Length: 172
Image 1 (cartoon, rainbow, N blue to C red):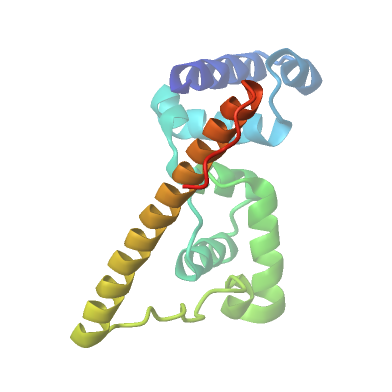
Image 2 (spheres, rainbow, N blue to C red; image 1 turned 180 degrees about the horizontal axis):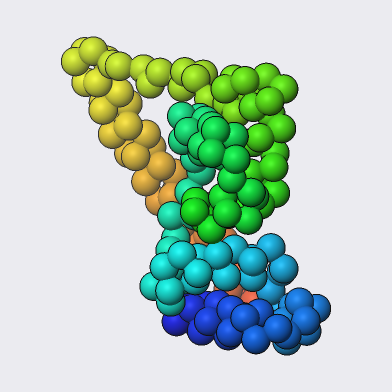
């Protein structure tokens, strides 16, 4: 699957480089235009090895986003130059820049970033012993329940056979 994806990327980049219409690339290879532009930027930056890059999908931290946006603003980089340099989609960069200008570095923070995860409960040794004892008891009861169901099914099957041949079931 990875090799097939890589060959599609290479094909798309070659078509894009040779001037093929984006709609033709999209319909022929079943890819979206943003991906093709990103792949082309990766190809321009690092050649065909750049098409193997998977880090571009990783979410950037607030610090990374801030560093990128400040570099774009301070060095007056165009969005195309930034896409080529950082291998990040143009629409992401536009959103980051807008948020940074409106709210500063806090505008680049993810909504759930900085919130603490629910802490896992730590059990004492006595609680672990009790828990283990209850689990063993539960297993025992489940096995006993399964056995009783099986016995009941066997008894019902025997009674059904006896009714077929006209015998009355025994009282035992």
